[in-house]
Length: 410
View (spheres, rainbow, N blue to C red):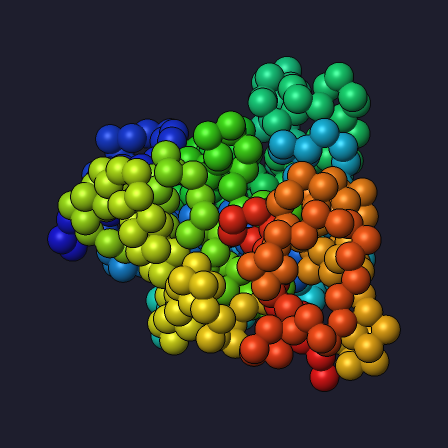
């Protein structure tokens, strides 16, 4: 192997905590390590939040290590209390299986599963048929309740009340690691830093039960400068599924991130050499927009392919350049009869999800934050018909400086 992947991950800013740093670095430098990352199947698509973890998997596989993507068909039945103030809504087995299958397809875009180079496993295979008494005798005896209660993921919930149902989650995730160790020789678990307590549980279980080395390593969580998890918009999550977040919207999300986050995101979410990352990250004022374009293009290329990235970039440039030449601008099409009657601006904003409610739309209009076909509109009861279409046969509604939506008639 060439450069030690531990050093690559460290230089790019991935690593937050590691159980046995020197041992892990040495291990990753001398042999192919089988490692795993878990994905609870709580939705039918991975999100931008998952993408950092997927990038780490790609770095690891490129360096000759073997990923196991563990789909949480079993753990999703309970739900991880980490970072949640309330218990998760329970999901049906059918929904969880459908979501896990969607994850499987998406991960195959990034990870090479051919010829045993990586494994997809599902913890439903061993968790759903567990004998509870056997589980307690085999696994429960290795866990101290006193120690568990000091874990950050449980401490946050103690005031509101933590159910025994969720308290089991750490045991189950630890059992997963032990099971993957037995089945595939997996001895390293990776995950977001919010998983540190759960990962420690698995490391400790394998070391106690098998007297074998096991390791854990966590990654930085992507957050805004205010500490809020990145990958959320007014519409909700930024999805990797193009049917849920279009490549154009995906591109625009990264194109519009805070200046202070550009270098960090270039390091974590692209494969650009670090010299280039530092050069782009050092750009200031108007020039930082070039770095944001590079960031948005590179991430969109990895997730959606180069062709979609080029189309998204052209659409964005056409909009910001004042033209409107691309089909990739988010568009809503109404029957021509609706435009004959006329549609009020508040309805347009709500339908485009440029406003969270009618009162939010009214407030934004009154504050002068909305233009239609480049003309500011301040009357919230303004009605538009097909007579108001521009030369491209559309209404181009803009909220603020960066959020666009096109309306057309069919």
